[in-house]
Amino acid sequence: MTFLRKPYQIVNANTLDRTLTYTSLTPKGLDLFSMGFDGMPFTFNNQPLICNVVEAQGIEDGYGFIGMKLNPNPSGATDNQTLNIFMVRRNDSIDHHPLDLDTIPLNTDPLGALPAISSTTFNEDYALVYTSYDEGHNGKLIICNYKQKPKVILEDENLFGPVSITRKSITDPSVPSDKGEIRNKYILYFTSENNLVHVKICDEQGKLVKDLTDSFE
Image 1 (tube, rainbow, N blue to C red):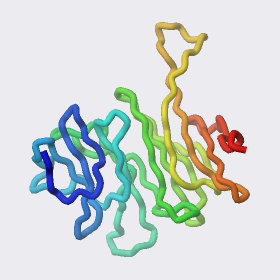
Image 2 (tube, rainbow, N blue to C red):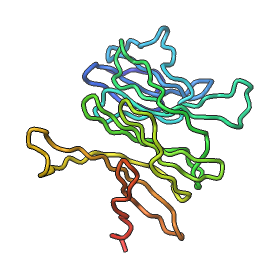
Image 3 (cartoon, rainbow, N blue to C red):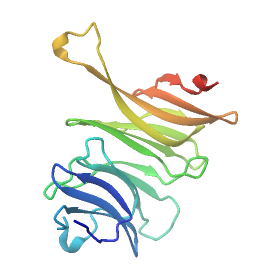
Image 4 (cartoon, rainbow, N blue to C red):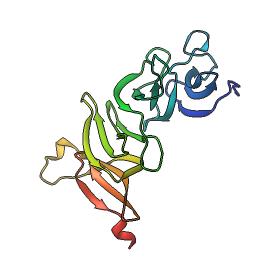
């Protein structure tokens, strides 16, 4: 079937619950909508599920989505604006209420780009990683794990650009076999140092695992 609802970006298609999430340009900005595969909207009169979206992307298992939305100042002023980090773990017609996980300032990286966000999921567990910048464009790398508060794991004035988090399953010989595999989380990020872009990987504590730039030289 083809649905004509002026989509701007398809965020995800949840095949388990047969729901489609997309963003659309409205007179007030970029808003996020959800509907079933049968074309029925989740909200009354197809009102936006989330307004003022600046970034949205599907999560790893495809059942939900994450993103950032702008918090407009009530006075209409454009200074000291903030972004909400949100997540919908599973998007269906019953449970589609966003979790507000954190609030960060609306500042850009040294190249003028908005903060970046990425996630990984495994069953009920999830982890979000995102960047945040101060007015001087100095960056922080923040992680928010399942049932935990957001935590700054890295501060670097040279941080910029996108981030990506993934899991890698390893077998630890010291762990009994009935305990299963250990799933470690690794984060890829970029820094700009001495006119050279560094591609780095750290663990979920912010400890540097490898500077991939060394492999390119």
